Image (tube, rainbow, N blue to C red; front, top):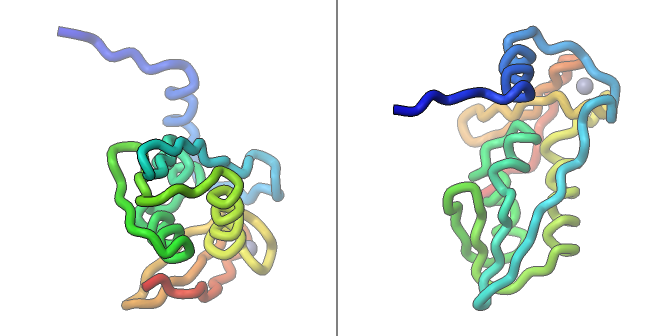
Amino acid sequence: MSIKFYSYEKLLDRALTKLPKRPTSRGERFKIPVFEVMISGKRTFIQNFKQVSDTLNRDPRHLLRFLLKELAAPGSLEGNMAVIQGEFNYRRLNSLLQRYIKIYVFCPVCNNPDTFLIKDKRVYFLKCGACGAVSSVPPLV
Ligand SMILES: [Zn+2]
């Protein structure tokens, strides 16, 4: 038998997620995440992939699909990591991540990252939690 204790931060997070979302000004609490990259045996491992997706409030599969399309390489999710076939360096992967954030996270109207990705049939829309704008985003095949 073991008892699970939540850390203070975790409790705070849980408390905060119960609060209604307030509009935040850009950069107030949003920090652009960075991939941790390791290359081994002709494969590239993004070690904090799940964590980055969570920070962005995006489905890891959506983020991975974007990367694989841009890199034209196969890959998969393994636990908290993304594993991509081939060798891709830190700089390239992080510049793709920045592009993803620009297209699929920041509201093009008010530049706020508090957005949701909504799928309607095969089309994705970005809905802003701050200004309420709904913008279409490029599809990922
Ligand atoms: Zn907005």
